[in-house]
Amino acid sequence: AQTVTQSQPEMSVQEAETVTLSCTYDTSENNYYLFWYKQPPSRQMILVIRQEAYKQQNATENRFSVNFQKAAKSFSLKISDSQLGDTAMYFCAFMNTFGNEKLTFGTGTRLTIIP
Amino acid sequence: ETGVTQSPTHLIKTRGQQVTLRCSSQSGHNTVSWYQQALGQGPQFIFQYYREEENGRGNFPPRFSGLQFPNYSSELNVNALELDDSALYLCAIKVGSLNTDTQYFGPGTRLTVL
Image (cartoon, rainbow over all chains, first blue to last red; front, side, top):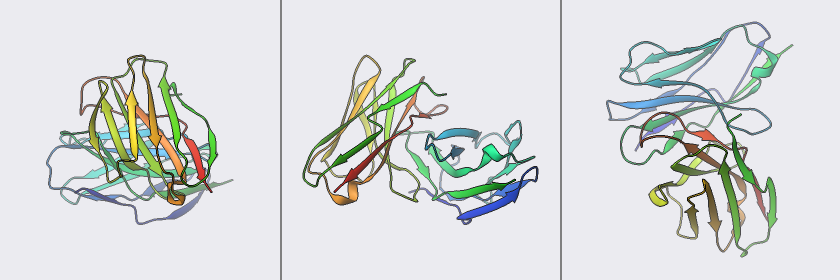
C-alpha cells in the first residue's frame, strides 16, 4: 500500500519570502501521479500542482513549483513570493495509474503567511 | 471554482441515525469519489463510482454506501451513525478516462454525530 508522509505539521513565513513544503511517499510502482492540494479555512480543496512520475521535468504553475526526486521518493512544493492568500493547509497526495483512482493523502502542513 | 457543489453544508445527527449527503457538478463527469476528513487529518478514501458502478472502496464498513446518477449527481449514505463518523465529507469528480488527470473537490459537508 502507498503511504504519503508530510513531516512538517506547521510552517510560517513572512510575506514575499519563499517557502518549501516537504513530502515523501512510498510505492513500488514506476508510474503514478503526485499532487499538491491547498485547503484554505473555507475548506474547499483546491489543486495547486500535479506531477506525472514518468516526466523528469519538474512541474511549475506560476509561483508554485515542485522538486520531484523519483529515486528518493520525494516531492516538495516551493512557493515563491508568498502571499497572504497562500495561508492554508497543504496536502501532498499520490495516485496510481491503474485500478481505482484513489488519492492517498499525507497529514498536511499548516502554512501561515505573516504580513 | 470547480463547479462541484455539495449539500448540505452542515449537518447534525445523533448516534444510530442515517444520513444522505449529496454531490453534483455543473459539467459532466463519469467518476465521483468520496473522502472522509477527520479534524486535523488528511482525507481518507471511502469509495469511487465510475459510470454508476462502484469502482473501488477504502477501509470503510458496508454501512457506508453510495449511488451515482446519470444526471451528474451522486449520494453518500451512512447508516447506523457512530460518534467517529463526525468529519468533513468531500466528493471529488473527474471528467475523462480512468486513471488520467485530476480530481476536483467540492466544498464538503461537515457532519457532526452526537
